[in-house]
Image (cartoon, rainbow, N blue to C red; front, side, top):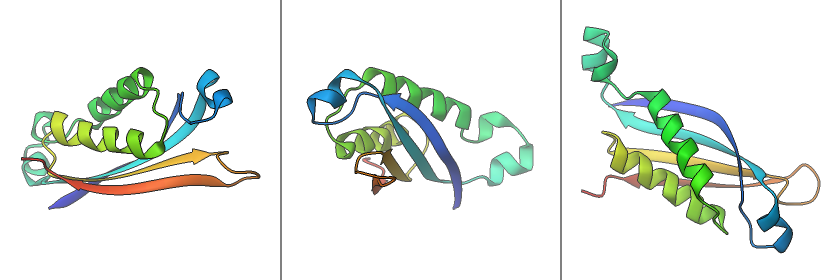
Length: 118
């Protein structure tokens, strides 16, 4: 199996437990790793034989726009679930960073790995 990476996706979302976090959007940064077999796509040079990563990014953007999670744990899980259910992916690793979650230049991040729910 091969690994496809989509890194440094940035979205402005409503996320957090404090009142001020519920009234203004905050930046989150998402890195995705997906296990995919690319041999057929490599041999045919055809987009329909691989994962359309633009489609992945668009669906994640739609998810981010529609959700207002309290916790990064919930939002990260939703991203992983979307990848596994909407695309022909059997394993994914999703890292979600929330810059400014702590004083100074610190950020909080969560990295989860999920396999297919079949």
